[in-house]
Amino acid sequence: MLMVRDIPLGEITLRKYERPYDSAPRELVKKVCLSLGMLQPGDSRDIIVDIVLILEDARKQKLWLSSFEIRDRVQELRKKNSLDGKGLAESNIRRQLKRLRDSMLVDKQENKYRLSEFAPLSELFEVKIEKFLIPQMVERIKEYLQKLEESESHAYSE
Image (cartoon, rainbow, N blue to C red):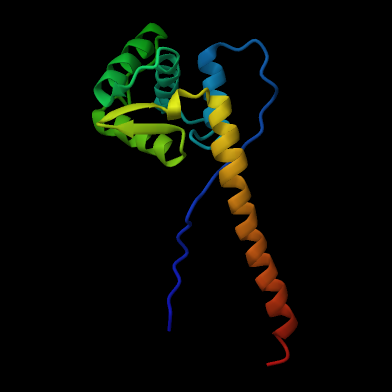
């Protein structure tokens, strides 16, 4: 008998927050991370916010950054904003970068990172998540619903 594992091929969390008013860039990036499920509500470990901020800044200059450079810039940014230094371990920085790569927002080449194709986050969201990931997931859910409808019609006839 064939065993099918319940391991998702992809996963996405979307949350809706209030409209962005006059928020600082870090607060805007934090809401983006929360909205995309990269950060959990109430989570004090928000190092991913600073990583995205650093990559956004590097994007404007078309810079590829190593994980060490990202860590150093994040540390400097967190110190400047009087935030704790938790989560700055190299392994955690790489783990967060992998999460961003898995969500197709970050590219890696020769151990250096950038926002994908140096594109703005709004464009990456539209092209890679809104128009690519979400439609595929919705289509697969519809396939399961269709199969369910087919199996319901045969459930009592066996």
